[in-house]
Structures are given as C-alpha cells and as structure tokens.
Figure 1 (tube, rainbow, N blue to C red):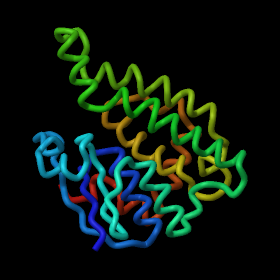
Figure 2: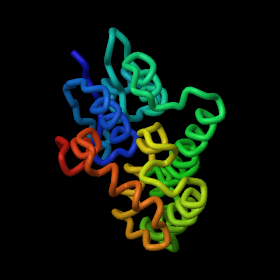
Figure 3: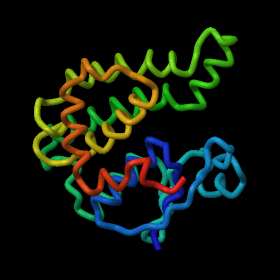
Figure 4: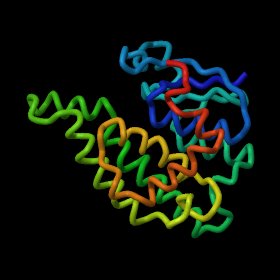
Length: 205
C-alpha cells in the first residue's frame, strides 16, 4: 500500500499529490495537522526527523522532500517530468527551484510566524507573504515561455511546483494580474485530472 502523510494546504504535499495522480497511482492519505503541531509529534518525527510533510511510503521505502519524491516517481514510473536533454533538464529544474527553493522556504508558515512575532506586530502574515511571493513570481513570469506549460508542451516538474504556489498566492491576496503567462499555464493545467484531484479543496482535511 502507498501511504502519503500530508496536510491539505501544504504546497509540498500538493506537489506530490499531483505527481502521484500523473503516475495513475492510488494511495492512502494520512493527514498530519500542521496547525495542531502534529508534524513534531514523536510518531511523525520517527518518519521524518525534519518534522515536515510530505512523507511517502512506497516500494518498501519511506521518502521525504517533495522534489526528491517527484523525481523518484518520475524515474520509476516514467512520468517524463524532466526533458531528455541536459539543457532542458537544467531549465526545468531552475524553474522548479525558483518556487521550491526561493519562494517556499521564506514563505513557510513557521518562518512567517516567527517574523511576525519578532517584529512585535509591525509585520503581518499577509504583508510578509505578499512581500516575497509577488516579486519572486514576477521573476518567474519572465523566466517561463509563452505557452500553456512552463517549458515546452509537456507537463514537467516546474508545472508541478507552479500550481501549488499560485494557490498560495491567491490565498494571501497576491495580485496576479501582472502575471498573465503564469495564470495562463495555471488555467490550462487546472483541467488535467491529476491537477484537479490534487487541489486542496478536494483533499481530506
């Protein structure tokens, strides 16, 4: 049995749900309530000492870190998430990392809450999120092509990272009007079954 330990609003978990859907796999979802601190409970730390989600149990393995999980699924299930040529793979990884390694860590809820607390209230959660998400998505807007995918015509790792990040951007009230290319990609991907099924509104909370 495949089991995914995740949280419905977690961007990283959202990515893995999309990849599992693209692979046509069925899995059991086990909720780890981040708002209740379940990620630092002993039973979850035994799964992932980082106290993070997602954790995927598959093929007799216990995998952590969403991009590593997505690449494992790509390599073992032939998803085609990375182009065949080295230059294309480098570009797709750069787009994916622009989200997963530049936007996501700074806008992790734990980081944002610490900033709010340390500021004595001068910083708000909404203000923090908008300050970092908006400008960095604007840079990504300049990096992507003008079609309905981040790179080429196939779904790649970059698309899997983009969609959850735009969900979060909307959640925090980021103005997406200046990002027509990203919004066009997002709208096209929303119609794909794997992306639609992975959406937080359709997951167990």
